[in-house]
Length: 131
Image (cartoon, rainbow, N blue to C red; front, top):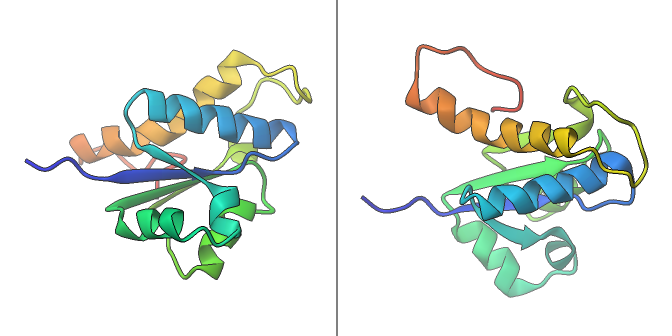
């Protein structure tokens, strides 16, 4: 069985949700959920990163807020993500600026993994954070 190639493109903005998006994406990558691709490299037109995203079997975008900067970059490239998470839509504990609450990072990571759990148990309904 071939391992699915999944990439994670995340906002790394200066706002609290943007920082959560970035930290959650890093943790998802560490846990083996997918490989990180820098949204700044995509926005700058860095061809190897763009090709890496286009070659992926599964693309996950994590944006901090409803502005949707990471998704907008993919839209400009004509790339549609399979999963889209907006951190500001999650049940967060804090609204702090740079005092990141570890439980909020946990919420972002859980939103990423929830789709895989639902796929393994098809009787479960759609869950927040899964497309």
